[in-house]
Length: 203
Image (cartoon, rainbow, N blue to C red; front, side):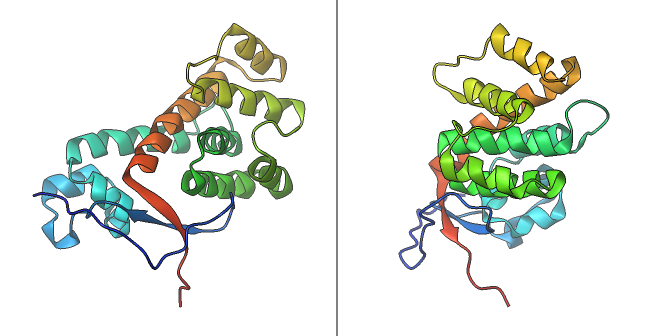
């Protein structure tokens, strides 16, 4: 099935990074929900994702989508030790802010605020960028996420040493690396397939 190119002239793109809920508008036609096969549903992993234009676009390659979704869920939802959920979300938000992905930054900033109850600090990251000054632990996490997301990469042993100095053990550092690296890739995928838009009024 060939995807059709789409345009969305009536929707307004956000002009700033925000913790508000946004929509995402694909540039190619997502797979229609009625076209889902068992293989597509297996790739979606969660049935609710059939309502998401992003996941329904990725469902055109269900095997890769399934691998992507299971990786994502393991990084953010497997809390058997390692980095607290708030700081996994902070790393993803920092990578997204660095890469200019307004949609991903909004999602993970909201989660970082929810799990940390530090909404003002998260908003400052969005407003001022990844060079903003935070406390030592969050600063080290943000700087490591940015270093992993830069091209060429400049994450090195000095970032690991600083993360250890602010209290991260080996498993927590591994979680940070996986979260930031995954979203460095995910941002680029999302930015190449569509655009964010201010959410429609939902009633």
